[in-house]
Length: 214
Image 1 (tube, rainbow, N blue to C red):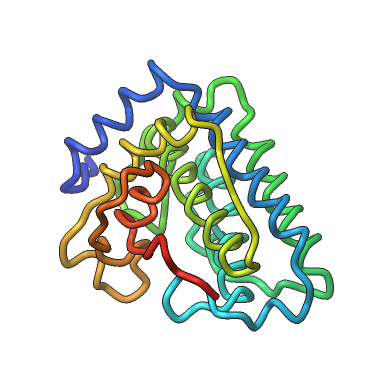
Image 2: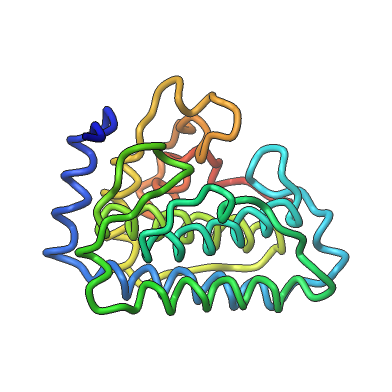
């Protein structure tokens, strides 16, 4: 039997969220916000640095696209790690991103998605996560990655208060410590913050400075 990762308390917190918030709807809002932002980029923007250390916007987009396809496959029970690999952006990066985003939105729209088991190859080789846990992971990724893209392009980004309030406990549940320093870690170490703004707190908790500027 597969063993649960050493974050069981955090995972239970995420499972409880599905009883109080519409995780699928909030995830969709985050993803559609990311689409709106990506549609504003130009080819010249692809070489810009982003708040994600060591990634240009080109690198960030290929990561985001791979995540969309990986999560969509996992929602169908497919845990093949090949599906999480980076793929070329192609001649039209915006179209490539939009297609990937729409793909995962369609996958998550299945009525029983929160009750499924997700084999998330990038998170664990042998543990299958609940639908609520998996959608929570994707949700917080695209709240934060929308901010990343917006900052890179010098554009504003905002979410409804209820989306940010739902994202906050998910951000709190992300494991800290040395795992944040490992190569390829999803988030860097927490950045000290004194702001009372909830969105800025989430950004800082997940390794970005709210004051980052291109």
